[in-house]
Structures are given as C-alpha cells and as structure tokens.
Image 1 (cartoon, one colour):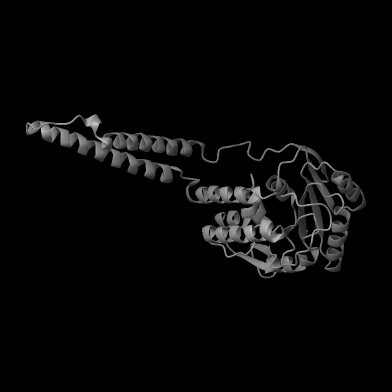
Image 2: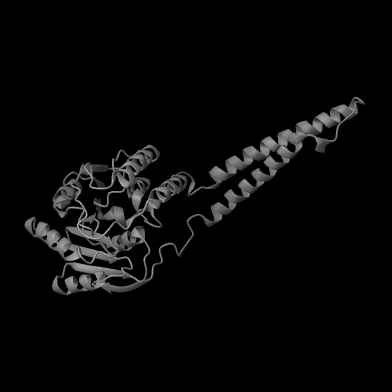
Length: 318
C-alpha cells in the first residue's frame, strides 16, 4: 500500500464527507493505493455515524472510536499502530489542511528519502494575538531546544516513513514534538515544505490558549527524557552528589573552626549559632534526597505499562 492517511478528529461531522471526497480525488488522480484511518476522539456529535457511512461505501475508509476524549496524541498513537502504508500522512479533519499537498509530501519521502516531512503554514488564517504570535514564540523555543530547524512544529500536515511511526511513542500531548521524538529515535533526515493553510469552514477550533503553556511544559519534559530519561541518575545523582559534597565541606569548616578555638583555649561559639551550619545541613539533606530520587528513577525509568492503554469502543476494518 502506498499511503496511510491518519486523521484524528473531535466533533467534525460537517467536514468529513467533503474531506474524504477531496482525498479520494487526489489519490485517484495519482493512482495511489491508500487507506484513510479516521480516529474519533470521543466526539459528541454524529462524526462516528458519518465515518461508519463512509466505511460502508468506500473500502479505503477505516475508523477507530474512543469511548471518551483522550486528546490528539493518543489518537495519533492508535492511528500509527494501525497504519499499513509505506508513507503515513497525518492531517486535521477541519479542512484547513489541503489534501492537494499529498503528492508533494509523498515524493519527499519516496523519491528524496526523507524520514519525516513537516508542513509549514507560512501564511495562516488564524487570529494574530491568540494563535499566530504565541505559535511563533513556541516554535522558536522548540527549534532552540531540539536543534531541528522547522518553522512549524505543530502543523498537523506531516508525512513519515512507515518505520518512523512504528518506532516512536506518541503519548500525553507530545504530538507537537513528533519531529523531536523521531530525531531521538535516530531518524534525523527531517525537512519541511511550505503548505497552503485554509480558513476554517465549519465549527470552531478545539484548542485553547492553554495548549501553549502545556506545550512548554511538554518541551521541558521531552528535553529531560531525551537527555536523562534512560539514565536519570546522571542528572539527579550528579546534582545530589555536588550538593552533599558542598554541605559536607561546610559542616567540616564550621566544626573545624569550633575545634580550632577549643584547642587554642579561645572562646568558641556554639556551632548552632552559625547560619552556615543550617545551610550545610540543608545541602546535605537535599543532596541525599536528589541522589535517592535518581536511584528510584533508574528503577522505574520507562516502566509504565498503562501509558498508552486507551479504551476503544469500536473499530472498522482494523
């Protein structure tokens, strides 16, 4: 199979038939063998009924329905798990991503041998202050931290080699950082292409301003995991050891000062009268706690078995 198109969605019943017709036209014109996997992320409208209807009429349409709303990352995770095409393309269901970009993305993967191709919506039809400006700041930070020179990390329109999506784990809200996840998995041939962004035709955006706050927190988490996720002791152990050492040296200095005064028959103040004594003790306690945290982190590192356990209500052809 040439292409798997993975489409996560939440309450997008108005756009689904038009979106599939557009995808089908592009795929037929280019003679692609393909599948379209709709992941209904717990929609409250009739989205699943539309998917079911499309699936009965077109053999290429497949579907997964979550029992409740989990978020975009879980939807992509399940879609990636089911995808069979040589190239996996993701896009949003709101018609703001153009299926006309599919041939360009496909050729970048198959003919130019890129691992991942990300869309760049250079011209956007979004509110300036609530989306565009925060997005620019967010992407600048992501470029700096990840070292990947992409203008738009969060663009939903992306293409991947099949092996890439089978070897990365998208969980939580990490869909924003799939290029970073791919890089950490050893897939470094990453590029971007400028894509057309369309104004929303139906409904309203499902993402609020909190996604930018969460995005930064996720970026910090991902940076930490990429650096110390396998060996947390390298972070906590080193910091804890340094703090304990500084505290121990400080205690020795305070105690040595007291001992020197006693040996020279000088008036020696109480050790507990010195603020440095309490600072030293605090450093030793914090250092010990950091070290123990690192040790426990080593034991539980990446051991969660429930992280991607999502309750699926129905499947179609999967």
